[in-house]
Length: 167
Image 1 (cartoon, rainbow, N blue to C red):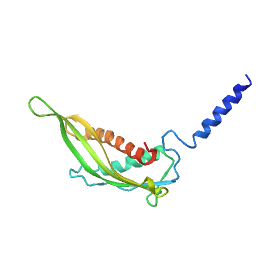
Image 2 (cartoon, rainbow, N blue to C red):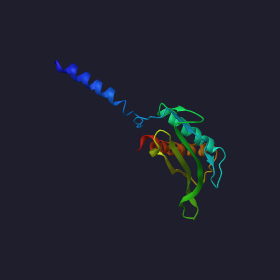
Image 3 (cartoon, rainbow, N blue to C red):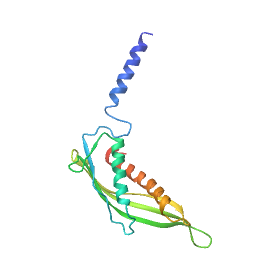
């Protein structure tokens, strides 16, 4: 019985110490204090107006929400930049009368990441994800918003994992 308070205290001490090395977002210990996300240009052959602004904001928001880094416009310790290089709609399945039954929207984003505190972490990589939708529907309005939400959530999380979480 005398060992129970000691055991509880030891467990509490170990759990508090371990949080300084690893946190719930998986980022571990980051030496950087600031980050900047430069505007991602839309260089895709098929242009969908405004998606570059939405993507840039989504990446900024994800990093702000999952780290304690401060967003800056210039001179950031971590710098994200790049461009949307492709916005592609392609048929994925056909019907019996040889028409598309389902289409797939795929967006490709080229990202250059620079870590001024640890240059070994720098990379340039292409990220992509897709959204399937019925071919009878037009990719406009709420359907386009839904597609961008799904695609950008996955791409930004993949960028975060590659640059900070090292997953």
